Image 1: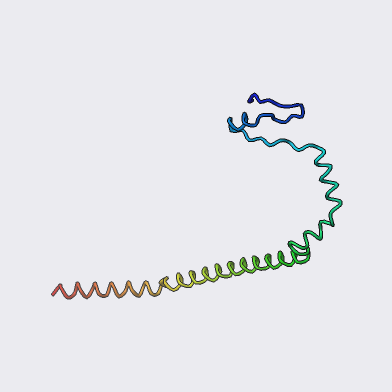
Image 2: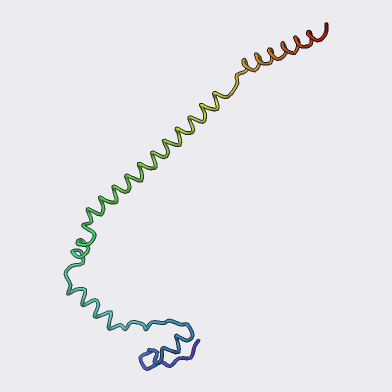
Length: 124
């Protein structure tokens, strides 16, 4: 690693040494700061009241989530219904464009009849 000067507590004495090398290291928090934090947390009013003021109660949050889920479910069902409708339309369109066997044989007979008439007309 990089040779830096460290004091007795493990903190870096000259931070310019780190910055010149492109290293950005923050000092580690001491364990005493954690003890102070936990004692401050108990002296505050309850955390639930703090969160209720910002985002509302858990009941309101649950209701919002329920509404979001219902909207998503509604979108999914609508999308599925639209897909089914499109598929049904495609099948109907394809069925309309298909020729039946009777239509095909009728068209063939007409073609052969025209061909016979053309041959008969040029033969005399």
